[in-house]
Image 1 (cartoon, rainbow, N blue to C red):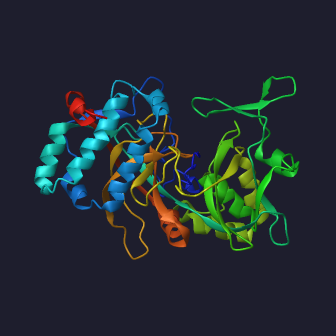
Image 2: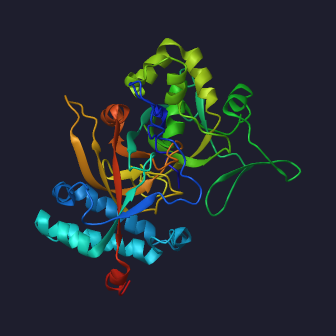
Image 3: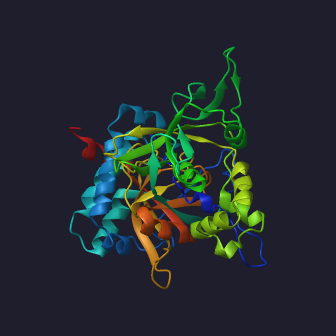
Length: 401
């Protein structure tokens, strides 16, 4: 139901380097006609799948089950075949086979051997064609809110306006339907807020203007109302205007040094200079709308299924096959000293406003303040791999389904 606009910590988006060398272009779009995935083979130098296998846990199995739930919907067939890499049946069978392999009780060596026997492996080309991917983090926020404007609750999240037009198949925003029936571009963030253009369509009111921006970037939130009732709001569309990450603009403005860029730094910048940060927020012309839902699958990603901490990955849905198993190799933000190696199997179940290139991926860190800290500190290069079941093995895993 949402496009969880995985916060990706898209707030933090800033492709930045502190050395005199040219800055990495993590947001470099994939050239037209190119594939984001390249086939690799057992002889290629890759991180150990057996090591990742040893890190398997119940959360990984739960995440696979969420992807399998998504594949049960007939509407998912529209996203396949994906290039010449996989069909819908092949992608679905890949999850079933991988799940069985995880639960097989094999040794790491045996697991690796079976993995290569049953699966084709692909590596992301990354931003530079050499496989370098920037891994940031996002989380599901929790805030206080009111159903009506009240003292201390002056900053609204808005319902989807009736004149917003999106593609019925892809959800891509097309613009605003005018009184004549023609399509026009939607007003910018500044025009919406300064002109109070959406008055009367408020869903809830939050305490803090910066909090509403964080929820917009995340695409969903858990809200505790003034009467202690808990509700959940999720993504219900966005305007056709361009997204630009607040972190990118804060670095360009000289407000935050590249090496210090994270959500706490952005929050502190807002406290120090709200007028300047508000100006930067207006530089992100895209605007997100919300609806209330029952929260049974909260937090949900762009696939509409529940996302799982450190088992759900957000990537660019236009250039990677949805719902599948990936292997992530990077370093992870930590609440203790150091940056531990992170080599885990994950599921591609989400996307984000700033995750629009093969050089970007976003790790879901969880819910609440601790997850916020991890997400804010996550900024590390690494590599991303996809596993697809060999086509000749598909029938044995889908028989009877």
